[in-house]
Image 1 (tube, rainbow, N blue to C red):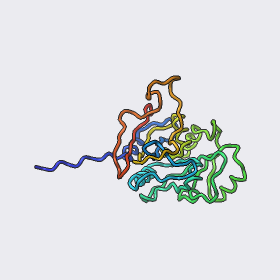
Image 2: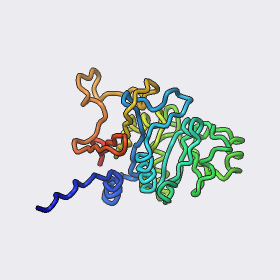
Image 3: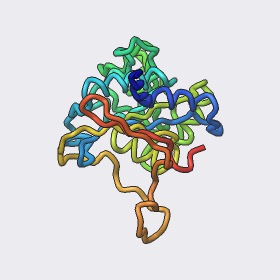
Image 4: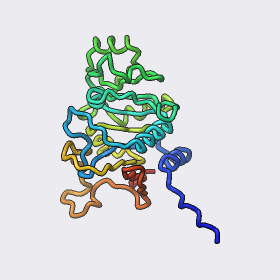
Length: 248
Protein backbone atom coordinates (compact mmCIF):
# COMPACT_ATOMS: atom_id res chain seq x y z
CA UNK A 1 0.00 0.00 0.00
CA UNK A 2 1.35 3.36 -1.02
CA UNK A 3 1.62 5.94 1.75
CA UNK A 4 -0.84 8.79 1.51
CA UNK A 5 0.74 12.05 0.34
CA UNK A 6 1.26 14.66 3.01
CA UNK A 7 -1.48 17.30 3.02
CA UNK A 8 -0.52 20.43 1.15
CA UNK A 9 0.02 23.35 3.51
CA UNK A 10 -1.71 26.51 2.25
CA UNK A 11 0.61 29.38 1.40
CA UNK A 12 -0.89 32.83 2.07
CA UNK A 13 1.90 34.66 0.25
CA UNK A 14 1.36 32.65 -2.94
CA UNK A 15 -2.39 33.23 -2.70
CA UNK A 16 -2.07 36.98 -2.23
CA UNK A 17 0.58 37.23 -4.94
CA UNK A 18 -1.66 35.35 -7.40
CA UNK A 19 -4.52 37.78 -6.73
CA UNK A 20 -2.32 40.72 -7.73
CA UNK A 21 -2.38 39.61 -11.35
CA UNK A 22 -6.13 39.84 -11.81
CA UNK A 23 -7.47 42.01 -8.98
CA UNK A 24 -8.88 45.37 -10.20
CA UNK A 25 -8.23 48.08 -7.62
CA UNK A 26 -9.78 51.07 -9.42
CA UNK A 27 -6.75 53.33 -9.63
CA UNK A 28 -5.07 52.40 -6.37
CA UNK A 29 -2.66 49.66 -5.23
CA UNK A 30 -3.93 46.37 -3.87
CA UNK A 31 -3.69 46.74 -0.06
CA UNK A 32 -2.70 43.94 2.33
CA UNK A 33 -3.16 44.68 6.03
CA UNK A 34 -0.84 42.59 8.20
CA UNK A 35 0.05 42.58 11.89
CA UNK A 36 0.66 40.31 14.88
CA UNK A 37 -1.39 40.26 18.06
CA UNK A 38 -1.67 38.32 21.31
CA UNK A 39 -4.58 36.03 22.21
CA UNK A 40 -6.38 39.00 23.79
CA UNK A 41 -5.84 41.22 20.73
CA UNK A 42 -2.91 43.28 22.02
CA UNK A 43 -0.40 44.69 19.56
CA UNK A 44 1.99 45.96 22.28
CA UNK A 45 2.24 46.21 26.07
CA UNK A 46 2.32 50.02 26.19
CA UNK A 47 1.91 52.59 23.40
CA UNK A 48 5.56 53.64 23.61
CA UNK A 49 7.10 50.21 24.22
CA UNK A 50 7.80 47.80 21.33
CA UNK A 51 7.01 44.15 21.98
CA UNK A 52 8.23 41.28 19.81
CA UNK A 53 5.24 39.03 19.16
CA UNK A 54 5.93 36.86 16.11
CA UNK A 55 8.01 33.71 16.32
CA UNK A 56 10.87 33.03 13.86
CA UNK A 57 8.67 31.21 11.35
CA UNK A 58 6.07 33.97 11.14
CA UNK A 59 8.81 36.62 10.98
CA UNK A 60 10.14 34.79 7.92
CA UNK A 61 6.60 34.76 6.48
CA UNK A 62 6.36 38.52 7.02
CA UNK A 63 9.55 39.06 5.04
CA UNK A 64 8.24 36.86 2.22
CA UNK A 65 5.10 38.97 2.18
CA UNK A 66 7.17 42.17 2.12
CA UNK A 67 9.13 40.86 -0.86
CA UNK A 68 5.86 40.16 -2.70
CA UNK A 69 4.69 43.80 -2.47
CA UNK A 70 5.86 46.91 -4.29
CA UNK A 71 5.71 49.10 -1.17
CA UNK A 72 5.28 48.83 2.60
CA UNK A 73 3.61 51.45 4.81
CA UNK A 74 3.80 52.27 8.51
CA UNK A 75 2.91 55.28 10.62
CA UNK A 76 5.48 57.55 12.21
CA UNK A 77 4.50 56.11 15.61
CA UNK A 78 5.92 52.75 14.54
CA UNK A 79 9.12 54.45 13.37
CA UNK A 80 9.50 56.23 16.73
CA UNK A 81 8.70 53.14 18.83
CA UNK A 82 10.37 50.34 16.84
CA UNK A 83 12.88 52.01 14.48
CA UNK A 84 12.18 49.31 11.84
CA UNK A 85 14.27 48.66 8.72
CA UNK A 86 11.24 47.56 6.64
CA UNK A 87 13.36 45.35 4.39
CA UNK A 88 12.90 41.78 3.18
CA UNK A 89 16.39 40.85 4.37
CA UNK A 90 15.39 37.45 5.82
CA UNK A 91 14.54 36.23 2.31
CA UNK A 92 17.14 38.23 0.38
CA UNK A 93 14.67 40.69 -1.16
CA UNK A 94 13.40 42.20 -3.32
CA UNK A 95 12.82 45.03 -0.88
CA UNK A 96 9.56 47.00 -0.95
CA UNK A 97 9.60 50.79 -1.09
CA UNK A 98 9.08 52.05 2.50
CA UNK A 99 6.37 54.68 2.98
CA UNK A 100 5.93 56.48 6.31
CA UNK A 101 2.74 58.37 7.16
CA UNK A 102 4.10 61.41 8.98
CA UNK A 103 1.77 64.43 9.10
CA UNK A 104 4.19 66.60 11.11
CA UNK A 105 7.53 65.15 9.93
CA UNK A 106 8.45 63.66 13.30
CA UNK A 107 10.65 60.98 11.71
CA UNK A 108 14.15 61.34 13.26
CA UNK A 109 17.03 61.96 10.82
CA UNK A 110 18.70 58.93 12.45
CA UNK A 111 15.81 56.53 11.66
CA UNK A 112 17.05 53.29 10.10
CA UNK A 113 14.33 53.37 7.46
CA UNK A 114 16.04 56.41 5.90
CA UNK A 115 18.95 54.11 5.02
CA UNK A 116 16.68 51.63 3.23
CA UNK A 117 18.13 50.16 -0.01
CA UNK A 118 15.29 51.76 -2.00
CA UNK A 119 15.27 55.05 -0.14
CA UNK A 120 12.28 56.18 1.92
CA UNK A 121 9.12 58.12 1.07
CA UNK A 122 7.58 60.35 3.74
CA UNK A 123 3.92 61.15 3.13
CA UNK A 124 3.06 64.38 4.92
CA UNK A 125 0.68 67.35 4.85
CA UNK A 126 1.03 70.94 3.55
CA UNK A 127 1.38 72.21 7.14
CA UNK A 128 4.47 70.13 7.99
CA UNK A 129 7.50 72.30 8.96
CA UNK A 130 9.74 73.22 6.02
CA UNK A 131 12.87 73.05 8.17
CA UNK A 132 12.08 69.45 9.10
CA UNK A 133 11.65 68.61 5.43
CA UNK A 134 15.07 70.05 4.62
CA UNK A 135 16.73 68.04 7.40
CA UNK A 136 15.09 64.80 6.28
CA UNK A 137 15.82 65.40 2.60
CA UNK A 138 19.46 65.86 3.60
CA UNK A 139 19.32 62.27 4.88
CA UNK A 140 18.01 61.03 1.53
CA UNK A 141 14.27 60.99 2.23
CA UNK A 142 11.77 61.65 -0.55
CA UNK A 143 8.76 63.77 0.34
CA UNK A 144 5.20 64.09 -0.88
CA UNK A 145 2.77 66.62 0.59
CA UNK A 146 -0.84 65.51 0.27
CA UNK A 147 -4.20 66.88 1.44
CA UNK A 148 -5.17 66.39 5.06
CA UNK A 149 -8.14 64.12 5.80
CA UNK A 150 -9.33 64.07 9.40
CA UNK A 151 -6.33 63.56 11.67
CA UNK A 152 -3.67 63.03 9.02
CA UNK A 153 -2.72 62.44 5.41
CA UNK A 154 -5.63 61.57 3.11
CA UNK A 155 -5.31 57.84 2.47
CA UNK A 156 -7.25 57.91 -0.84
CA UNK A 157 -4.98 60.72 -2.06
CA UNK A 158 -1.88 58.79 -1.02
CA UNK A 159 -3.00 55.57 -2.70
CA UNK A 160 -3.85 57.43 -5.91
CA UNK A 161 -0.41 59.11 -5.86
CA UNK A 162 1.38 55.79 -5.27
CA UNK A 163 -0.56 54.21 -8.13
CA UNK A 164 0.56 57.00 -10.45
CA UNK A 165 4.13 56.28 -9.33
CA UNK A 166 3.77 52.64 -10.43
CA UNK A 167 3.01 51.03 -7.06
CA UNK A 168 0.50 48.23 -7.65
CA UNK A 169 0.63 46.49 -4.26
CA UNK A 170 1.00 47.96 -0.77
CA UNK A 171 1.59 46.11 2.49
CA UNK A 172 0.35 47.99 5.57
CA UNK A 173 2.12 46.92 8.79
CA UNK A 174 0.83 49.39 11.37
CA UNK A 175 0.68 50.69 13.93
CA UNK A 176 -2.72 50.82 15.58
CA UNK A 177 -3.85 54.19 14.20
CA UNK A 178 -2.81 53.29 10.67
CA UNK A 179 -4.45 49.84 10.75
CA UNK A 180 -7.66 51.38 12.07
CA UNK A 181 -7.62 54.21 9.51
CA UNK A 182 -7.34 51.81 6.56
CA UNK A 183 -10.20 49.67 7.88
CA UNK A 184 -12.39 52.72 8.52
CA UNK A 185 -11.74 53.98 4.99
CA UNK A 186 -12.63 50.62 3.43
CA UNK A 187 -9.28 50.50 1.62
CA UNK A 188 -8.20 46.95 2.55
CA UNK A 189 -8.23 44.05 0.07
CA UNK A 190 -6.43 41.33 2.07
CA UNK A 191 -5.72 40.72 5.75
CA UNK A 192 -2.97 38.49 7.13
CA UNK A 193 -3.09 38.21 10.91
CA UNK A 194 -0.56 36.42 13.14
CA UNK A 195 -1.93 35.30 16.52
CA UNK A 196 0.62 34.38 19.16
CA UNK A 197 -0.28 32.08 22.11
CA UNK A 198 0.16 34.63 24.89
CA UNK A 199 -2.01 37.03 26.88
CA UNK A 200 -0.62 40.57 27.15
CA UNK A 201 -3.49 42.81 28.28
CA UNK A 202 -1.90 45.75 26.50
CA UNK A 203 -2.76 48.07 23.62
CA UNK A 204 -5.54 46.74 21.34
CA UNK A 205 -4.45 46.22 17.73
CA UNK A 206 -7.51 48.02 16.33
CA UNK A 207 -9.40 51.02 17.75
CA UNK A 208 -13.23 50.94 17.78
CA UNK A 209 -14.69 50.85 14.27
CA UNK A 210 -18.01 52.36 13.16
CA UNK A 211 -20.71 49.75 12.48
CA UNK A 212 -22.74 49.75 9.26
CA UNK A 213 -25.94 50.32 11.23
CA UNK A 214 -26.79 52.61 14.18
CA UNK A 215 -27.55 49.91 16.78
CA UNK A 216 -25.73 46.72 15.76
CA UNK A 217 -27.10 43.46 17.11
CA UNK A 218 -24.60 41.21 15.33
CA UNK A 219 -20.88 41.19 14.57
CA UNK A 220 -21.81 41.08 10.87
CA UNK A 221 -22.45 44.84 11.14
CA UNK A 222 -18.68 45.40 11.29
CA UNK A 223 -15.91 44.93 8.68
CA UNK A 224 -14.93 41.29 8.21
CA UNK A 225 -13.37 38.70 5.96
CA UNK A 226 -14.97 36.81 3.10
CA UNK A 227 -16.25 33.31 4.00
CA UNK A 228 -13.31 31.58 2.29
CA UNK A 229 -10.70 32.82 4.80
CA UNK A 230 -8.03 30.32 5.88
CA UNK A 231 -5.94 29.55 8.95
CA UNK A 232 -2.80 27.48 9.51
CA UNK A 233 -0.27 26.93 12.25
CA UNK A 234 3.26 28.14 11.61
CA UNK A 235 5.73 27.30 14.36
CA UNK A 236 4.15 28.33 17.66
CA UNK A 237 1.80 30.89 16.02
CA UNK A 238 -1.46 30.83 14.10
CA UNK A 239 -1.70 32.64 10.76
CA UNK A 240 -5.15 33.69 9.54
CA UNK A 241 -5.72 35.33 6.17
CA UNK A 242 -8.40 36.17 3.66
CA UNK A 243 -9.93 38.81 1.45
CA UNK A 244 -11.98 41.54 3.03
CA UNK A 245 -15.69 41.04 2.48
CA UNK A 246 -16.73 43.36 -0.32
CA UNK A 247 -13.20 43.74 -1.73
CA UNK A 248 -13.03 43.65 -5.52
